[in-house]
Image (cartoon, rainbow, N blue to C red; front, side, top):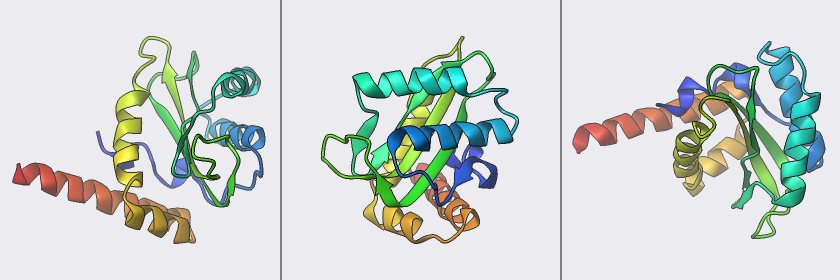
Length: 160
């Protein structure tokens, strides 16, 4: 699986307009409704907000990974929100989150998001990539950076 298989111009919000955690989750879920991936977001919003109250999905280094299962999705669904100012997700390192990768998985495969998040984490841990993504001025620029990273990974696999 490549990141660009799921992250494309339709699945990126840049910049995300929300200024707090719950509003950012709602904005991302609204984007899924607009993309006709979800019919409604109210139950998912409440569910994800409850998860966040119990344990923040912020992983540190400016990244959060809110996630849920949904009866409305047949495959892994992903939305990437990019915030230039950052959003407080109560991260363990105290940093604001600039990258919010929300994943929804089908009921019959609730752990499908883990491999994708691991792949995304590998990319976003690169400080050069992180800076380039934050400096991007369009969803198209973000897609290009992710596609270039995907190609580098394929090239690296060919060397092994």
